Length: 402
Image (cartoon, rainbow, N blue to C red):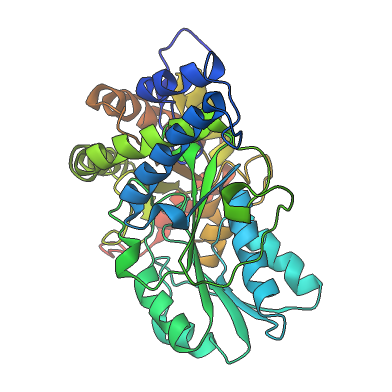
């Protein structure tokens, strides 16, 4: 890291812990260390804070507090939901999901397929959207579960999960959504939907890493995944992670207050970033521009390596990612962009910028000031770029690409 101030534009990977969240948590690392399950008042007072946090999460999601189960992370919530549906309906061996899910769902479903379940992985189009007729046709009488993310972590594309939930219910299947990227960025009112289960993660909402939630609609068949004590009404054993749960409650309260800012100011910054980046030649934005999270931008710079762009940005203190943080470290281009049919030359040069409530106009200016030069430098040494320029020069004069 050089002397540059950090410009953090990787909020879909993790987010800064809000100072208000830290302040809410601190007493539970100190004098309020009681166990909420204890009979004595010392532990009992802690339970009151746990109940308040549960109510705050329910308020953000538009559901009842008793439908909220606290977990360790989004991955645990996703895994638990899928297992619960399969164990509740042992006679049903079919699962429907998409090709663009987060690994917490995708890898779990691939494992199910290896172990004898039948899994349909639905494709998406060039814009990253599902074909709803195809979704409906894929749900069968023996479908135990339909799992579709609310919003994609790489492109920000939002799926019509309320509609898909209704299709699943009509055919007697359980519907689960990984809403890790959507919670706090788009309004959610679960009581007005037919969604059975929803997963969220605290550290995408400005809490520390290590706390999540699984929403389970009242009346949905459920089998615990982590078994032991009676915590979370017997649905998730293990002593509650009190400081983090309290922090998550505070974060959900903040998210409700900041939702409008996220969809106006933050979205405006994201749009300005994209407009500036699109001035660079042979650049494109990935994902349906009309159905996207307000904070997310996936941009492909053709004929350059995304890893090289990230390293050069990092030298300037700018944090972004190539595709998803959970897949970085492998040189395979993103499974999401591959599923969308983004050309290989572009998928390899894809960068995801994800903003937050803490993002500023100065930060966007800093990126826009440096990005064109970075791309230019990398293209100078790219044999693919030289080939592309030569072929363009030889093209019919006056021909404009459609």
